[in-house]
Image 1: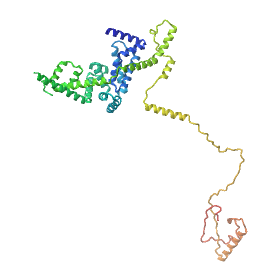
Image 2: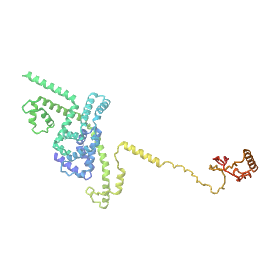
Image 3: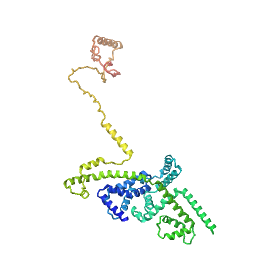
Length: 211
Length: 254
């Protein structure tokens, strides 16, 4: 099955290099969601993420001749995405000062748009806004390192190779991103921690009573 | 918490907890055992894992719905079509011309013509777009409008400049204007007073002189004939000489 997929991918790549736009669209359909998810976690909002992810595909389409099949197509595509992300000014601009305002705006939009499920929708929107606010306080390279670690599951060495920096720098960037997220989400963490503690204590009591 | 085990250091362990969260560390089992023995490190690890679970929940909530992918693919296909038209049109036109010369040539295997024609480059230049900041665009538009308004302004009416001698054929009219000229003139008169004459003779001589001047109208004071009585015979200079200088124009001359 995987061989068939690879064969079809290789065939699609060959056809796309020959100028077959339909074949390239098929490749975009294969990996489009993955690239878009990366952009969505890296960017500030969905519209920026769509622009950026489509820019990645346009760059790939223009430079398809440079693909040498030395690595997988997605690895090649991800390298293009990383360059596009770091070169994108909109994604690289600081949003820290706007994060709190965005939380309020998005919360307001949510309450007006989804009145039927206001509480859960508002909760989700606030959660997303807090996460984006935390990531926006990071430098673009730190944010990208965290996204590559979390979404792509790349090792520190792989990320360091892609971003041309040391492994220690990547490790610090990931730790800093998690610390920022923890700081922003501290309320829910405390609640969850309390709930986990309560559950642990209840389990201990039950075990003790069973004896 | 320090001292939970002999070699345990909470601070150093916490620095490695992020490796446990992402399953990155080597020797993970030993680290997990160390964390399991320390309540503080265990709580810290639990907090980090809860952070990542919450983050994952947020990213799931922010991910686009399945319905949106069709629109995304359609928009991407449209942008790809534009890029293809921009970059592959010269090749397509070249390939079609090649096809006319060699109809059996497969288009996909036809050699790519790298050099674009001048017309295609011109069309590409016409379709070129640049991203510039909105304030710069507004400023450029205002500058262009000002320059256009300055270039298209109505021509100013010619100013009639009369030459200094516009009518040379006009008859010359001569006007004489008397202009008073202030000059200085020194009038010197020498008075001879005969010492032997008495005052009566002197007054008589003065009366005779005035009478002679009155009888000769138009004569200037300094040009009147000297009466016979005023001769230099028996002249002797006066003891004192009184000079009077009168300064002024002709009208005021005395």
